[in-house]
Image (cartoon, rainbow, N blue to C red; front, side, top):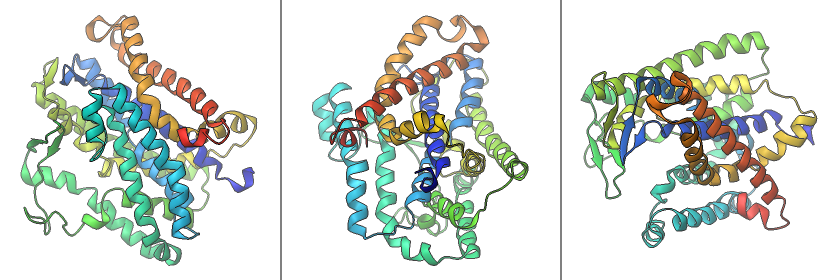
Length: 387
């Protein structure tokens, strides 16, 4: 069986899943009181370092899907039917769970007709993933035939598009935050290359965003050969360092600017949308770190007993872990904060925040892993619950 599996993809899924949970743990330290709240400079520093380190989690999931599924090699109807069972049915189930347990159930159920439940914001990912799946059959004939140089050209154009969020900021100044009816902020966009109030589809619209990670997974599968550890690190470490510097530097600078260098820093939820500009999934920093992570994780090909008994079953349950983990994380975080305290009152001082982030993430990961692996083993029913 191992000879037929891409073992490193299983490792990638687990790492990406843990990174997602760490990212959501970090959010506890800059969201609060119905808006944004960073209590201390130590919190700002640790959130910057830890969240930047793990922020490539969503792109890694897209690369995994691309590497395994793209181009598709069977009829479109079969592809969609398989995705229906694996992705859509568990998603609908857990959307209903969150709608019923968090917030106003009646309003949440009405909102689900148009979008995800905003109390369970992590479910945005599934809508994006379904969009990627919708376009895969259209691009698959081209992906079958594309050559290395041609694919490099399109990846180069996509990489340029990851700079566009920065160009908007430089050209238009600090972004204005526009609040929709749900209170979720959107950054006002500075129009570029054909964009206008009547046209959002500028020159780079169709080759920007997550489509690049789809192409990146294809490129690694078709054209990137196995590299030695020496060459892997020689490429990956500079890429990761550059991406990390972009992401971390941008976030921390924006936090300092919002608070005038003083702490605590608080404000409307829209502050976070500005702080996270260099963490957006369609930015250069995330793209560079994603490439670096792929290069490193590809070297993780161990398929021994630990892989068979732990890594493989947890990898297979990782989608369910993503769907349900916020229910566990929200409970675990309350316990950990009550135990170790927060901010200047933290029992470990400067080290309180990273210890709390790691503890919450690891406990949440462990609980959801055990639960989803067991649920997935329920005959006939398990896969409809956790994928």
